[in-house]
Image 1 (cartoon, helix red, strand yellow):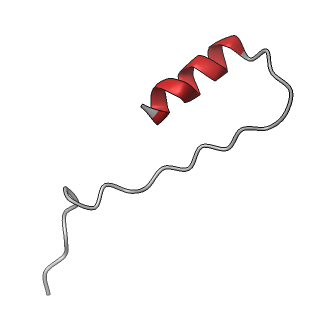
Image 2: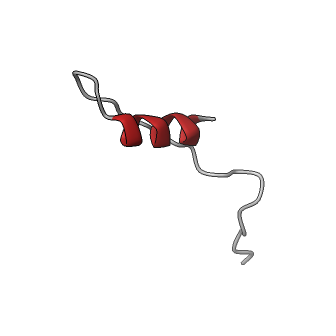
Length: 35
């Protein structure tokens, strides 16, 4: 959903100000190094 908002704003781009999009890494599907 956030990625869709980022795409929309990048395409339209008619707003004043700065928008920051912060994504959290995928915690459930990461490969963990087992030692």
